[in-house]
Length: 324
Image 1: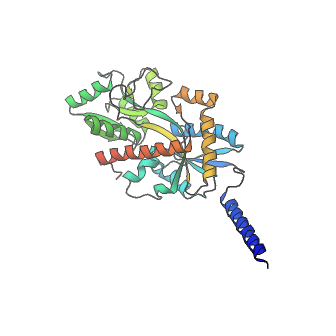
Image 2: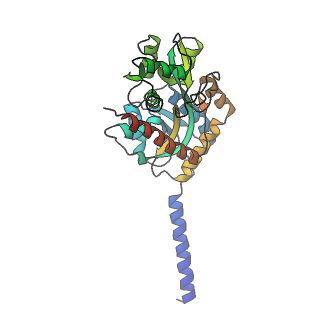
Image 3: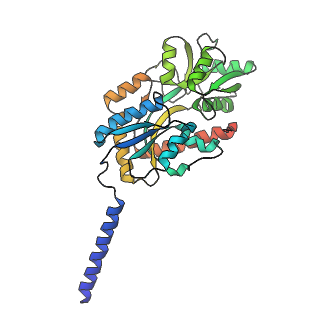
């Protein structure tokens, strides 16, 4: 064989092998079948409602049905574990929440590793609202904190160890020297009932849950604990506006995928969710309920998850929060 021909043949084979490898790594024309969106909470809550709005909008962009499947249990670990062990083929995603970030910090054992789940996109968030009885003698967060210091401390209801209200209380205790006695209940609805019955002085709850109680006059709100006012209840000042900038806690929903899901699929899914959150009909519907649609790029959600992990981790360390 002539040396020049041999070199040409070798180059052609090398190119063919490279193309074959690239094709093996690249996803097929995704998606070609329905996609499963696992929600680690019961139906009807803020996380579930955001998941269904995202599924509705993203399915139109992707041209395939997105099926929402509720898998509550274990403080999100049941659903998250299911997704962490799913095939990384772009047909199973997790609707994530703060618990997906914080569980490994407070639980003795975990069925999966944090690295088994990859951030994909932000859906939206429901700011947490600090709630007290309607006739409570304080009207601002500053007055509440001062009143707690002058007494033996206030009872604060949570939905259990590591729940969003628990983190709100943790920041109030460690950053602002609020005297609080944590009272864990099984759910946010039980915590609300405890405040209504004046068995505890306060709790916090997602805006979507809190707003009906505020509009009916059954409860009083002291602060929105996110960085902007709630679109559906703009009269309520944020904790940051009141001088408590470290109090940044929200009930958020994002999307995670099994580790090793192809980046091209992750980017396409992120773009579809972003488009859904920018759809006027969906955005208006969510805002009307007290949920803020976010969307954004995959890189932006990765940054958010990193910052959330650091922020929540600092609260866990400062409070010694552990799920016994």
